[in-house]
Image (cartoon, rainbow, N blue to C red; front, top):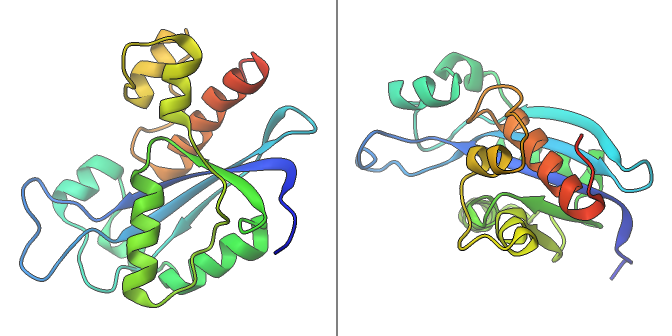
Amino acid sequence: MSRLAADAVVVVDVEATCWRGPPPPGERPEIVEIGVCVLDARARALGETASILVRPERSRVSAFCTELTGLTPEAVAGGMSFAEACTRLRRAWAAKRRVWASWGDYDRLQFQRQCAEAGVAYPFGPSHLNVKALAALAWGWDAPCGLGEALERLGMRFEGRPHRGIDDARNVARVLARILWGIGV
């Protein structure tokens, strides 16, 4: 097993197909966007960001999903396959060798489930940071809260559009930077 690289944290946020109520028969949540924001540990700053659009294979982007995320069926139809997206995470950001982070456990569990169902290698290593739980612990909050509320409690504004992977990932990275280094970025 290769050594863990401590030069950066790969912060990830996924958007998945969703519906106002239960999914239509035969459909279930599938990742349609992977937002990435690298938190550079050496520079103590936000680094590269990216939005990886992913073509769903077993479900459709609903009108509700488009309203929530801004992602249209046409936009994700032009995305890459889930397998290609996982390969890109491993190659472009060394996700297998770095600590990775997300807001809560949803992203980690969605990747595990979808990788298992698709027969795709899990793109991350074993070191995952649940920033939602860390924030509650770091600041003594009674319970974890949503990302928007956490930013508000910290006197920070949400940058970008909520429920877009790239913007959510960047904002999660900002909270993590505050936890790690006490700085606002």
